[in-house]
Length: 261
Image 1 (tube, rainbow, N blue to C red):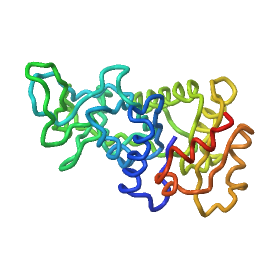
Image 2 (cartoon, rainbow, N blue to C red):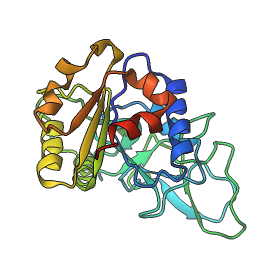
Image 3 (cartoon, helix red, strand yellow):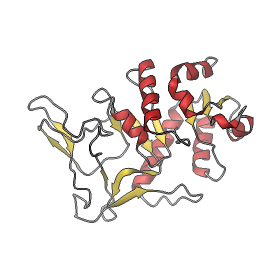
């Protein structure tokens, strides 16, 4: 569960993913839930292509199947990607208000979150591959003007958008199935009732064995910042080290926190 801390930019995210990959090359058993709109984590994960392809938990409308060698994108086959669930939407999601479909926007001039470089990833001749159409201004199904898929993290969320609702459902399922939850840079404010309830459900009715919360290094001992999480469960470790320190050696720090789990 990731929420971007102050001053943590693209380089820190890339370092975090690079060091996490060194400890777990396949990212087996690792799923990401993000409360951010930005694409910093997406971009960092994209550098692992083609071994790892992101699964955003949505079925985007601008995919197509082809045998072309040059692609702007690659979609994970069901069950084979690595989850990155962005419950408040994303800056690279476009929503059609008419048919309620979602398009995925490829980055320009860099490696895309799905994996393929914008110059085109090579694929075997004649093999069916899935690309991404680039006209994001209008819906490819009905021609309606699209809009950014963003759901502000307000106190009273309106789950009227089916895509946002699906993202929250997917996040809830992942949390209920998780044995270990690592929360990065998120203070769990009481106003965020939906996330509070999902974590509480994971503690009471899920498979959770241990929780680690990585807070800001400005939090000192972390006792005050840890209070909201200790109200959820006593089996929580609070690490007031900041995201930058975690990024340098995520495996060692997390292994130490989970050593008694």
